[in-house]
Length: 102
Image 1 (cartoon, rainbow, N blue to C red):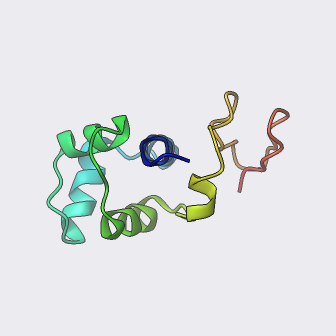
Image 2: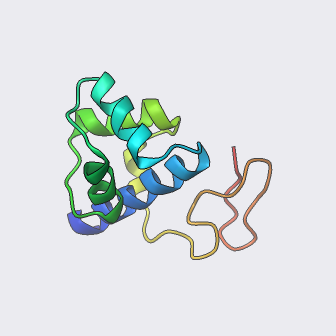
């Protein structure tokens, strides 16, 4: 899979995980600053749109803050499921892709 597609997929994962945790982009940026990454709300917006490259250290921090597993094999799997975007609600299984919500 091309790098741009992986970046776009990761951007979608960031946005969905942030929304699932009820974090605003401002709160996410504040948490990133706490972990030593100079983020602002605009940084979060750009990251979620896939127009800002995320460093490995930032990816680890995002996974810690938003409580998701940043498994590289998952990023290279292909396009996100059109129905659940690979993040079905907790306790549910997507009928389209078969992924279970954790």
